Image: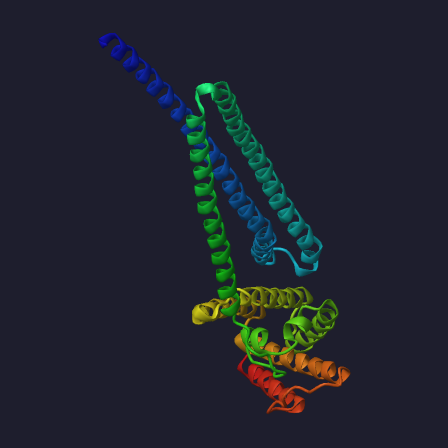
Length: 341
């Protein structure tokens, strides 16, 4: 009787050891399956990040180009700036493209290796499982139950997380769109560059148009030469600085949000003041700068009227001062400046 008991006890112990070993193998297999799912989820996240990087690299390249352009205009005449500025932008974009391409290549290699290692472990575990299938139907049913439960658990956990990330990203995108500062633009010539860019209809489109810029550049050089004896090289530099300022302000406006409106507008006005001070330094006095700005606004007002007339649309709001009154005021300032000198 005692002998039979010892034999039965040994059999139970062997069965228990076998069951424990099998459960350990099943647990390891489940862990590796979960690792594969985590790798796939991680890959999706990296793909999203790379996609955002590809979307933003052109914007970043343009911002770098503008910063470089503002520094170059200080040392290179504007007549030569046009010849090199596009090449600079191309080089910056090429560098960004090379780095992002290299990043994606390294990422693909790393991801492929992770997936390969995980699948090798899982395949090995499957082979071990097939060798031990003779342990009995009850143990096989237990393994199937655990595997099915683990798979459902991972699936149920993964999908809500993915959906939640997508919903959160869409919510953030919608909030940013709603907070964009897009005030109504009117056909009225404002006083400052910031207000012109933000509130005056057609100002940015016309001011940055090459045809308009050529006409304005010639008119500005003639005016500065005849009125203030400003050299042609300085006039070209002033016109280029003003155009770069308008382009920069227009791009900064796109980043202004209604919840940080005061801070955004303050940065734009600081940029305008900085450029204005440099132009004053080139011209030699605030009187000349104010005279230049009034002539510039008059020129744009005339061009804007022509634009609306050509479109058979509304005309800009009438200014309180007529072109004749403006010219008289400019002539008076010239005479006063001459007396003071």
